[in-house]
Image 1 (cartoon, rainbow, N blue to C red):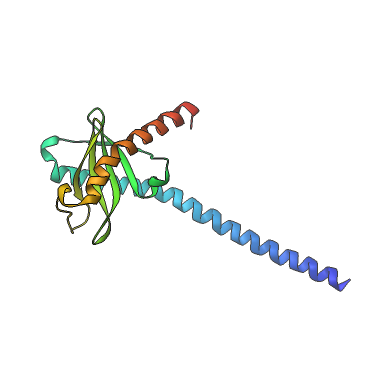
Image 2: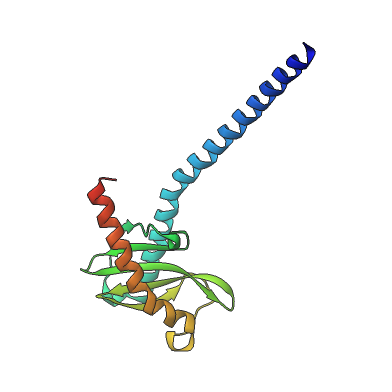
Length: 157
């Protein structure tokens, strides 16, 4: 009899523990969804600042966020610009200073490096193979993100 009481108490303790863990998990996930909007707005503001400072003559206006919906979405962001087929792409680039966010503009299937958010500037695309790599890769990333966005709109998500 006491053995079944001990098992019942163990199940109750485990139930309370599992409930607390589940509640904490739900709270953490909820805050991450809430923070995502503010994160994207902060990236958008920094992108606007970079484009205003380094491309003032181009008169870019940053519009809506486009979800990459891929593994790159954790280290990149894509924003539609006011011109047709123009996108601002922020991507984490590995440099000798460590990973730094870099801003690229992708227009009509070609990308060009604008600047880095960091004070430690990356000099030019001809001097940095990482920048050249991303200039070649970003048009494919943007194309895939647009396909994914179009597919998710069709599905009604």
